[in-house]
Image (cartoon, rainbow, N blue to C red; front, side, top):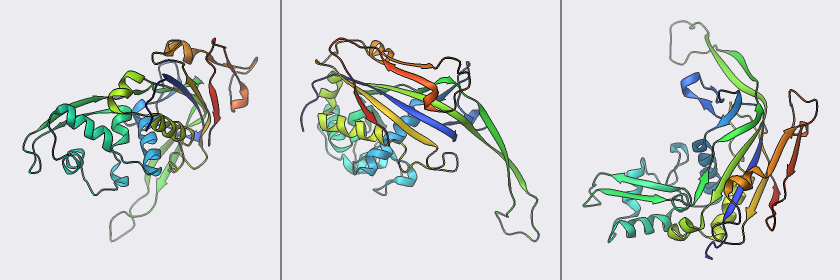
Length: 283
């Protein structure tokens, strides 16, 4: 595997149409919004989807969803104890974890587990990952619609039919969300995150919503519009990540107040000397 020698910044544009991209459990599972009404998707949610795509691509993951576990481990501590049984130091433990699991060498991980029958001592190891992800925020305020639903079947056996159960579904009518991220070369050198890993990350971003459909996100209701991938010519970067991300300008077209499609926005790149992004269409 080849070492990563160039800092990378990236932005992913995501279209949401009649879907709940990330429900807030503290607010009746309504789509997350900021105080200004813009839609929001947490960085944890985005990382979960990236992990799922990497797993679909055949990569080994440490943080797996229970319904997608591929090694019969019921917890993180069980998975760690099963795969790392002999290590000379905390650094050796971190090295083995990074070699074994792509999400550890990508996002980092805190290993804090009590001793088990397989490990004579407890574990307290921290790994800083090179890939940082911002929470996604919509380019304009979003309208959230609610739909009342009923459940008219019995969940448990009963002598007579129970009364219908009322509920609600909430969804964003339309939103164009922006996900920002960066890859730090210095941290990549420590975890072993490679050029090949960066390409896998790029592909996972391009296909972020493949195999992600649910009742809250029907197939086709969430789509990656495009991925902007800036590769600097050195390890620390020619410009700050903030300046790079801000070079992608997204504004509503003149006279447009309530956007309903990507075409209602003007998307342009403000040129940065000697730094031009690769633009990849989403899937």
